[in-house]
Image 1 (cartoon, helix red, strand yellow):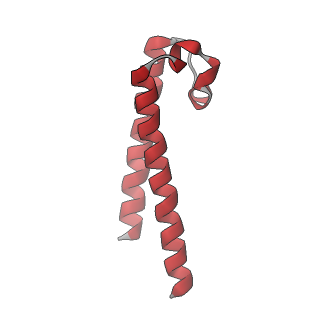
Image 2: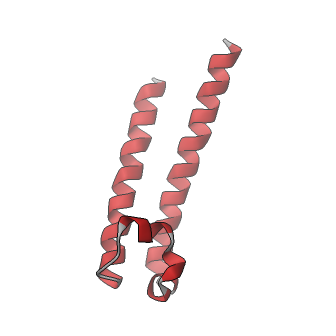
Length: 79
């Protein structure tokens, strides 16, 4: 079950990364995947509430993934 959940989270993260890049390119057409990691370099992105919201969704998914991986690792150590 852990692998299924990890796979699902990975799918959600990849989908959100694509969504964020697409949204960012509507604001800054030349935006790259790396640029999305540093949106503060682009005032247009910094000032976009919708972009910042979607960025927060991505961060939440990534945090959830890290928490799940830590939990599963802890469970393996205990067993």
